[in-house]
Length: 234
Image (cartoon, rainbow, N blue to C red):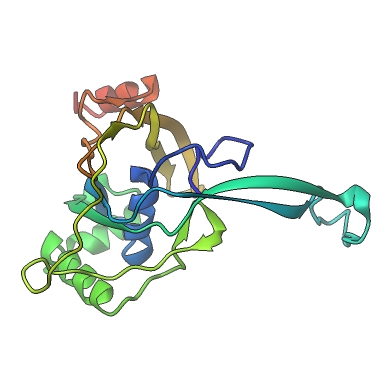
């Protein structure tokens, strides 16, 4: 199930996986402050199909004041209709970006330790990712949109196997959520900036070419330019 993260409605509004969701898959396999992930291409392998069903949900949350919820009480339950993508399958291409120690959102005392390590380079993390992905390992269960819908992955090698071809579909997908621009405070462990970015993807012969964040094709918030200007990266 894929929709804008800030939408209150749980109705599927997208035709495929977003770059943000794809990055989340890679971070589930290898999420380190030393690396960022940049999605470059998404291949849609199964036909785009939808599935509708109704779920029963509670309208209240348990808390320190509300220690128990009577789920048999009709006043605490509501029925909602969900529209989700069915039987999805993607081949996701990504680029690993290495963060220099000084650019990482980690405490300063950790930075001094990392700088003293002779093996602190991108090749270390590439080997780490390949080792984990080849074994199907992940730090947390992969989800597609909601925790109700879990996902699975495998690492493919195009030189050693015949890969499934993308679907024969060409169409504009419209304005779509790209990812959040986030700035993380390692001391408070909170996001001091969290603004949405968007782009207009086009699926051509079953393939979506994803632009990098710095591209003009990505619609970025004012906070992005303010932050990059402050860092001297514009």
